[in-house]
Image 1: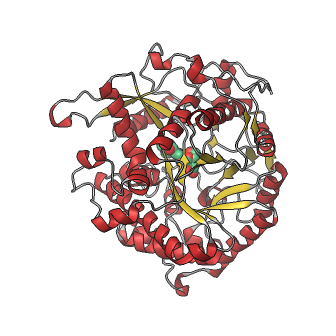
Image 2: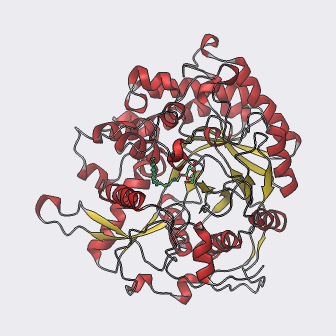
Image 3: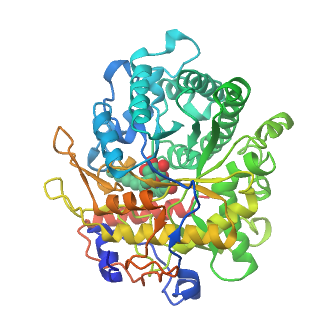
Length: 548
Ligand SMILES: CCCCCCCCCCCCC/C=C/[C@@H](O)[C@@H](N)CO[C@@H]1O[C@H](CO)[C@H](O)[C@H](O)[C@H]1O
């Protein structure tokens, strides 16, 4: 493996480069290279460390109306013109519903031992109502039995996510989905069905994937399903996701744990938010972002049972429902591990508001030096990952709640076509090497108890509102060919090597324990995006950044 120059790295990330919202000049201290901060170590990982791949049902399965499956909110959203780039849908996606053997055999060839995937709620219970047999769909239930049997036969351990964004449409139509309190009960019934059906085959359960994205993008600004834009809807959704997780945890704990002997947790997503400089106001502003994006779920479950102080202080009870004393005691400690999805970093400044808004506002910034991936929001900043892991270790006690990294990865955009697959993704290997190296530092230097690392994703798939324009996979999928042939990218071989040896090599192939991070540079602006798109993406990001 060769260390590529940073210009190539930056250009190859996307092929087609996105507009950037950077407002920093790059001369700011935290944008500058820092040898100590940016270097990372190679070498062996702890024994029993698990290397996994992740996917999600709606993003890979297709077969959107096969075998009695009910419609879900992403079917509705993507089948409505104008919601997804190119009006792409997940109707067929990677056709994994029909290609279970292909997916398992790809993993087997790569030496994969652990695989995270999600169940489609509406495949098991078409209306979302799972309480009794009349609401359940046997063909859907049988499908996942077959898939689990294939995994087990291939010696691949399943990590199963119950909810990865595809809420049965009926629940959205009947009581506004995650806005309605009834969703907590219905999610509990769904969880009970899943544990009782599959609990003898599955020992690792993840209740919800990225509730923050579900609620903020789906109900708060409406760029994801179900496409609502309302502050109260967003916070009702947030509140109900905490309660839904806690409900499922206690069902597992009380009814299944003793016999099934598995573990259960939630997966939260967060960027690393770093004070722009050492000023206390900026440090506090960054902490407020951490509280809102991560602490909203992590504090109730792993710390106090209740929302972080800044969240309680800055949101009155007409917006944010408060937990009862009983709920607080049910929330606290309701997990066996700390599931984390992490992709990128932001610098934060305080809004400098006075009066009653003091300590409320903040602004995010990115450095022009940070290489941008194929997704506009994703900048490659490996040092932020180490800081985040250390923060989680200290604040949420990773000795008690081991950290399972359930997603980390990087996208390309526009490089290669289905007819000319771009399988040389050394830039992706360099990105993973940097992030995994910084994770190793957090483990070795700061004693963060990280036990699982999961790459997003096994294969290219339906990237939500971006459709098929962004590729996160280590396996290339030809979305034009009805047979959906797949090809290993170079990164798949890199990851396979990591799984087999449990040892990280530096990008230049050396392994003396001290790799130097690849220098970074501004992404080359060779965009082919139209100016109309530039305006809309910038506007969208302005909206997201200003939202809270
Ligand atoms: C014609 C209309 C086009 C509209 C285009 C809208 C684009 C919206 C972009 C929204 C920005 C998203 C920011 C969120 C980022 C991440 O937190 C989030 N995507 C992480 O979620 C996980 O990401 C994986 C890769 O993105 C993967 O998709 C997985 O399912 C998620 O768990």
